[in-house]
Image (cartoon, rainbow, N blue to C red; front, side, top):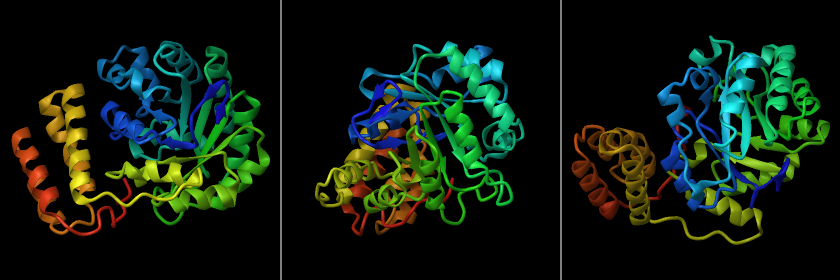
Length: 331
């Protein structure tokens, strides 16, 4: 698939997710085949003011490339400047017009921009002038059911030189509740000549295939469905390429992958941060297994990496059940 001048090896893309798609997570998902991975959303103002923590979000390794960098903000000039500052950090720039989180929306960023089509046009125009890298935008259906303007925003994106649009077909008011309206992805695809990437409610490989068949979208983006389940990436690629599904991972295989994820966290962030960052991921790896609730409680109380590692080895060796049976809560 081509996004502007960027060729990606398949149509399965890892969504940018705040607090989730850090370097260790991206490296793991890349190993399972993701054609393109994204950073967490990066503050334009944080970059401009040389925030150390903001710059840390851009740490990368060659093996995860190509890398998409997602920026957020609400000012054309600052987003253009931030785009210039990250020119050497990735292969693609994405602008966030979809985040529904209150602290982002209160600043006029994220999905709040869906209410400001003229501002969106000005932002995209400025960013397009600031970079020759492929430029994409991630949007929602609109602010609420009374203002579903994704077609208008999509047309603006195309007119201002974007190379693709990703649509999560829920309004900001919906958050992650209800069902994603895939028909809106189909409508957007019919109205645009640039690639459309579909997002929303892909928890099984068959759902990815169904989204493409129903909507005609050019690629799919996996978000919450991948929590504790990198096999979703692998299996989705196989289904889309006409292959047969492999057996689901055993509990022991999940444990080995969790340990690999933990080791990546240690290498990138050090032991102290790894201990706390792994807690949420381990809870997701344990979904659907007998004794998962007790394991989650123990993991969240573990105060050392040795203790955490011992819990992982014991639980996933002894557990039974159908891993990943439960879907993640909205987050």
